[in-house]
Length: 224
Ligand SMILES: [Ca+2]
Ligand SMILES: [Ca+2]
Image (cartoon, rainbow, N blue to C red; front, top):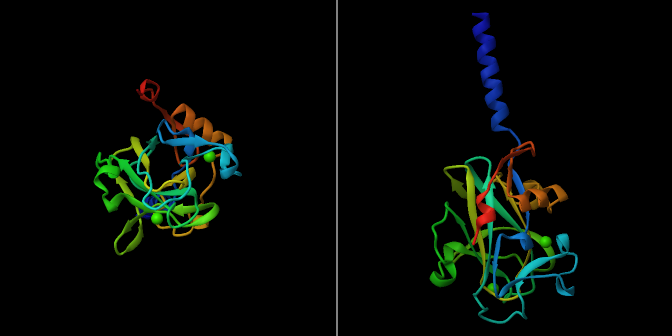
């Protein structure tokens, strides 16, 4: 009987630990996207000074009403676990005409070209500010902006597309986290990519919660 109680205690303790385990966190440089389609470009000029890794991506130009709505960057993100995820972007948004992107993350989102469909579910209303700051990726719907979360049924490769909506909205880095509750960057434990993060991104690796590399993917090298 005593053994049974101890056993039950161990089981409940271990489930407590896993529930409260460290979040999965992946930091990505925007300019190291696997594919970038013009007029979205990588830039390093004075406009985006102090960008992480010295570079960022944008549709170059002055903010103007309407925006270009062409070009995008795609990231292959190798998730080490299934489950729910949130995204944060390190951004600059000059004014009300340079503060949005389209965001789709497959396979949780469909293979939909949001620039063509103009589906507001995929519209990210970027928090304004003339210097780099973190903003949680949201849906900008008619009723306002609401934090997005994505649920992946399986671990492994996913494809995140950040597409131009309004010219001049700037993206420096992306932070992926399994913490979908955090409302503020500090709570979400956001970080700019470290040298190790950049190596993981370039080599196409996934990491476990303890920051150890778990898998490699080969497909990335054969991307068209
Ligand atoms: Ca706008
Ligand atoms: Ca950067």
